[in-house]
Figure 1: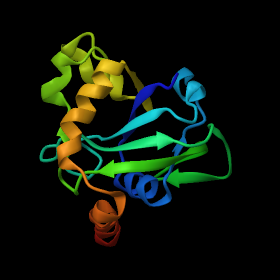
Figure 2: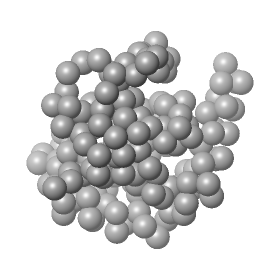
Figure 3: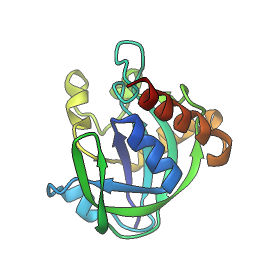
Amino acid sequence: MSESYLLILGDRDAIAWVLDEERTAFPATARAEVDRLAAGDELLIYATRGAFGNPTRDRGRVIGHAVVTSAVSPLDEPVVFGEREYPRGCELRVESLAPWGQGVELRPLVERLDAFPDPRSWSVHLRRPLLRLPKSDADFLLDALRPLTGSLPQHIDGYKEKAARAKSAK
C-alpha cells in the first residue's frame, strides 16, 4: 500500500531543480521516512516560508503533487544546494503544480491535520525532508490544492524564473 508524504523544500533552487528534473534528493543523514519511500508513494510538495528569501512576506505552502517512480538510491554525483550536499535521491512524476506564489497555506490548517498532534509546535515537524501524512490529511490537502493547480509545463517557468532572478541578484 502506498504512503503519502509532505516533501519539504526550503530552498528556491532546490524547488526549481525538483520540478525541472522531476526527481528529488536527500541528505546523507539516516531518516526512516526517506528509507521507507517507495515507487508509488505520493508526495505533496511543500515550499517553506523561507524558501524564496523573504520569510516575513512569504508563506509556507503546499504547491504541488507528485508520485515517486523509483526507489531512493545513491546518486552518481551528489546534488548541492547552497553548502549542503544531497547524495541520494529518487525519480518522481509531478502530477500538478500551483502557479508561482499560490498553493495551500499550511499554517491555518495545522489544527485540522493529524500529522501535527500539537498545533503550537507544528513547525518543528517541518525540519526534515519528508513528513509522513495520514491518508485523511493527504486527501484533505489534495482536495484544497486541486482547484489551484495545473500541469507542470503550465506553471514551472514561474519557479525557474524566481530561482534565476535570485541568483542574478547575488
